[in-house]
Length: 141
Image (cartoon, rainbow, N blue to C red):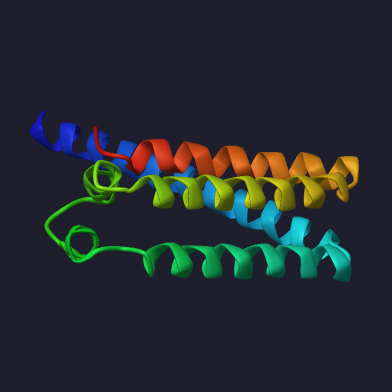
């Protein structure tokens, strides 16, 4: 009886692993198809968005006080806890800078999305939904 239970558990675990692996392969396939379908201009837009985001993140971090840097560098805090602790310490100027950066990135993303064909947009949205689902699963409450 005990051996039967062990085999059932092992079977269920292996089926679960195969299912996750299949989903992962499907996402990789869609991601590859999406990136291969982009024109050089669209690829450049994505590269510029990534670079802009990096520059804005660095510019924002350059405004941090010693206290804020201590929060960011605290390895005992989760990402969510750091964000919550940091939010309470931001000055009005920092909040305005954050909002400006957010609006700029949103405008760039909208410009990119307008350039996508219906097929590309469908794949883009599918990848975005997968990413959102992943974030929800990994975000501690």
